[in-house]
Length: 397
Image 1: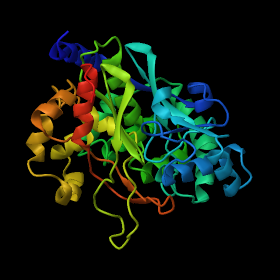
Image 2: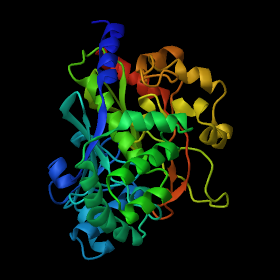
Image 3: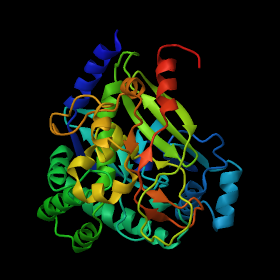
Image 4: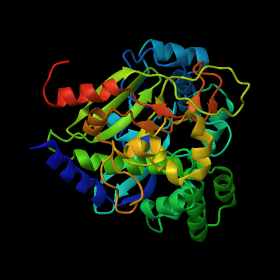
C-alpha cells in the first residue's frame, strides 16, 4: 500500500477516537507493574543501571516511597546493581512527563476511547504545585506530595469519576479557545476541569490544588494524545509514516512510526531552549526528557502557538524563522475538533520539506538536583526521520 493511502487510513482512526478520563488507578493494577520495576519516559536506556541524572533522582525517590530502600545511598545501589529495573513507560501504554518515574503504587490517570473502551492509555496523576517528581530532583518534600496524591487526591477524584467519564476533547477545545497551546499552557482546560469537578464533589483540598496548578490538565492530555496516536498503529499498514511518539530519556531522543510502532529510532538528544524561571540560574539543562512530545506529534503544543498568545510571546526569541508556515507543512490534515491546527506529524513530510519539527517541552536541570529551570522549545533532529523512513522501506542505513 502506498504511504499516502496508509496515512489516510491511519489518520481516520486517529480522528475517530473520543478520549475520556475514566479513572484513577495504581500502576500495579493498571498495567500490572511488578515490584522493583520503575517506568521512565522516552526510549529504553542503553544501560538502565545508569540512567540520566534527573531520572535517577526520581527513581531514588520512588525507591524510598515504595519502601524498597532505607536511604538514598541504598536506593542508588539497587538501581546500579539492577535490583530495581528501569523500563520504558511507553512499552506499558504509559506516558510520563519530564523525569517523572512511575512505581507500582503511583496513581495514574486512565483515559479510554468512548468508541472502543478496551483501548486505553495512562499517565501520571499530578500532585499539585511545588516540588514534583517530574522535575528530576531529590527534594525530599516530594515524598509527601506523592503520599497526598495517592492517599487523598486519588480517592477524591475516583469518587468524582464514579459519576461518569469526562470528555477530554471538549475540555481541550475550551482550553484552546482560552489561549492554551495544550502543552506549555493548559490553564483554560484546567479551569474548565476544576469547574466540572466542583459540580460533582465538594472537596476543598482538591479544588485548592487545581486552582494553584494550571498545568494539571497536561498529563490527562498526554494520555489522550497517546491514545489517539496509538489508534494510528492498530492494524496500520507498514507503509504509514505518521509519528506516534516523540520522546527523550535525558540521553537519547526517539520516535516511533505508525507503520512500525514497536521500533524506536533514536539519536543523541540535546537540551530544549527557552526562558528560565530565574534568568540568573546557570545550571545546564538536561537533554530532552519526557514523553510529552506526544502532544506536539498529535498537532498541539508547538503546533498551536500561533493561537496561544502567552506561550508564543515567551518562546518568540527561540522560534525559528518561518515557523508558522513551516510546521504546518510537516503535519497532516487537521483534527475535526481543531480545524485551525495542523494534524499528526508525518515523518515523510519532514524529510521531503527539510523542516525539523518542534515540541514545547520544559527544561530541567541536568545535574539531577536543580529541578525545573523553565519552559523549553525542542527541535527534533532531522536524521531521525530520514532513518525512520529508510528502515520502514527496508533500506539499511
